[in-house]
Length: 169
Image 1 (tube, one colour):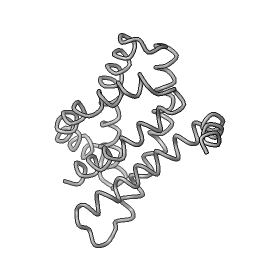
Image 2 (cartoon, rainbow, N blue to C red):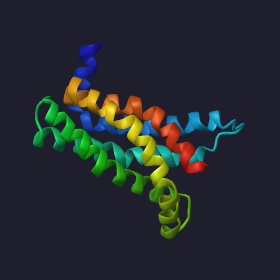
Image 3 (cartoon, helix red, strand yellow):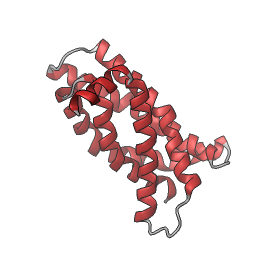
């Protein structure tokens, strides 16, 4: 089984990362709806979340490749640099796309999306700072590049539940 996973991930890494991102994003929203006590699943809402994986899967796939090519190795300074870049460049950009993009997919205006981003960015980012730096330190230090997105998506399942809550609260 491990050999099969390694073979698939090495040959079709972008496809695997994108597919997993779509699955995780949709599953996270579905689980949040269950936690909210929804009796009937809002399939359109879950589909919007899942569709984010089509953007964020490739975006993060290439982001990690760039980080690994520009900052190779596992030295403390290298790992810290990757974490800081991820935290202060990637996270804010992703939240902007997340809030504005989902608001637009819901049929609201771009300005509505910016307003939601203004309201929810800092509360979201404060929690991000408690979760992602540690997760990314473990990711960059212990995992080979081909499994980085897989690990991130496992953590991301819990994170997308939180984001779904934030989006719909």
